[in-house]
Image 1 (spheres, rainbow, N blue to C red):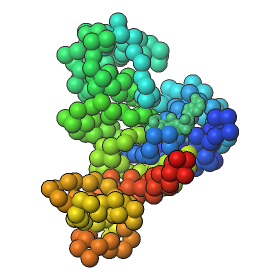
Image 2 (cartoon, rainbow, N blue to C red):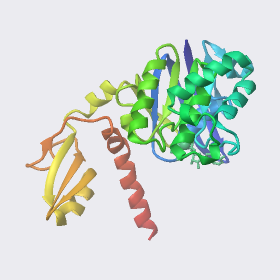
Image 3 (cartoon, rainbow, N blue to C red):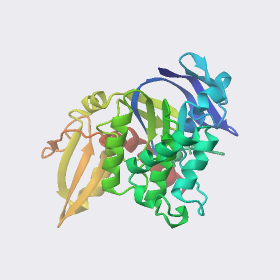
Image 4 (cartoon, rainbow, N blue to C red):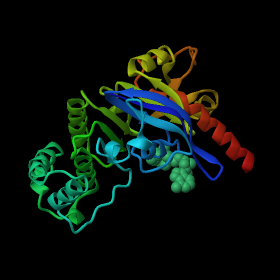
Length: 299
Ligand SMILES: Nc1ncnc2c1ncn2[C@@H]1O[C@H](COP(=O)(O)OP(=O)(O)OP(=O)(O)O)[C@@H](O)[C@H]1O
Ligand SMILES: [Mg+2]
């Protein structure tokens, strides 16, 4: 099974939210990352066939999804970023309702609903009204509804937002269990969500796909570029002007910082083992500086 994205663009007025994106996805987990406004949701909505591309195509096993129509929608599961629920429905009634919409056999759906509620740790809440759910519980119910039809392509837009650390771990395990024979695309701002389960990481920047790589390759790229430095607190501005600085930690009169630099930034700097979350600093640290400069120019 393969999902082929070719020259995909989506513009709003004259702004490209997704700009000429091409990628090939096969079974496994793909982590979609990028700052707010990078285009993650726009890309996922097109993959879920709820938003028409301005240009380009999406193909499943060489067939354009536009022509597959309902045959495609039957194969996919989608969790939107802002998944709304009827608050007066119980979890069970909601999942029954979605099963009916997806055309699932009622008897089959019944068993499936129980399985899924167990999977997302909501069995006890089966007959509770969604209106009484916490944000994280609603998110978990959203994940369950996306899985109802046993989708071959699973599209999850920030599935872990609002989940507590324990539920995050549970979600990661769930994904690695089910991703063997399906394509899973999930967007997140929390890199640790995808660190150990993503086959590849897709990095979006201003609508463009700038990286599609395995975590190992990305980490390799970051080798010898991540540093730990300790400087007097008053020198931190200087440091920030010269380097891409993340994770500041104040320790009395000194500040410790994680820095991205191609060369040793200070004689006392100690090289660090890169972590996947350093990609944010590496790929977006610079653009944030440019942004600051633009803002300065405005003042
Ligand atoms: N319906 C719309 N009308 C106009 N512009 C839109 C619309 N939807 C998205 N955009 C713009 O497209 C760009 C990409 O938005 P998108 O929601 O895809 O980003 P995102 O990566 O999902 O961000 P976030 O991390 O905040 O969820 C943004 O500049 C956004 O303002
Ligand atoms: Mg989004």
